[in-house]
Image (cartoon, rainbow, N blue to C red; front, side, top):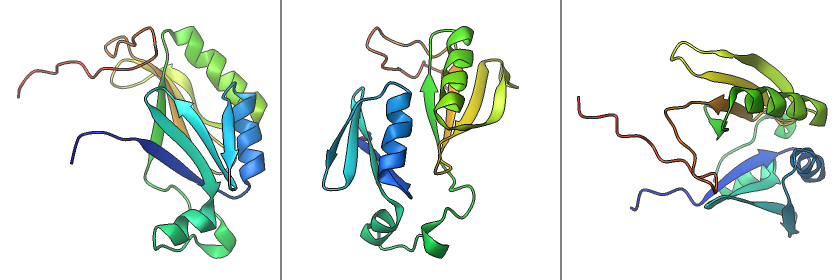
Length: 147
């Protein structure tokens, strides 16, 4: 298996509401058969009905399709400055997100905060000078050396 992620699919309760949320953040999506696709750099973020996604994965979505708490995954969006972290958290909140961790310098030493989208998907927004972003927004993991 090649070391690559091609798509991240978020199971959502209301595809139209979720699409409107991400578009309020400036994303532009395309809807195909009740599924919304956003180009996100070299991969795609996909919104699909939570029950349909669970069924497709051979799982159950929980009571009436509602999220059952933290799902064990957080998405991250790195930016180029601390100010961009603050701006994006504010924009997300205006679009309907809940900020669950206000921006601050964390224990590792970089500036970050977290919001959850209307379906409870956690997004960390971070400025980590050690993780340089290319002009196209792609991130390359630095060489941490051998241990």
